[in-house]
Image (cartoon, rainbow, N blue to C red):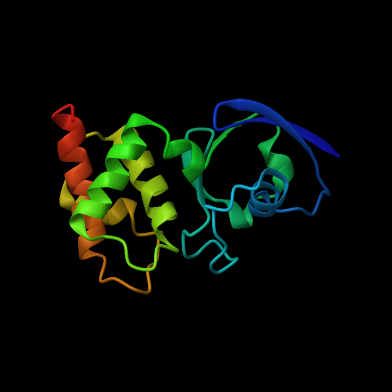
Length: 156
């Protein structure tokens, strides 16, 4: 079957099987490997994307559900002004260790700040709660999101 959707601002199409997961289509058909498979069960957030304006785990979304919707991956987000600020804030705050989970955290932070440009610490913790990291204690990642919100609020 063929699906058509908007991917990181571009209209695309893909031939898929009805059983294909969106994660696999993004990685294999579009070479967008920043979206990672961690658990394969929608629990870790490594495969986070924004679909139809909402944060989602692409490993549990059937690819056919992409038909006609807009999808953003880390590759697209990293080219936006907000994405660049978040990535820079993560680096400045020491939020990155191995880097495997970080794309999902950046996507989650983007989704949060689009809806809430000035989140409280508690709101950041809640927004990131669907993402797991095995290397850090989360504190630096939370600080990175708060720092990005501060910088975006200041227009930097």
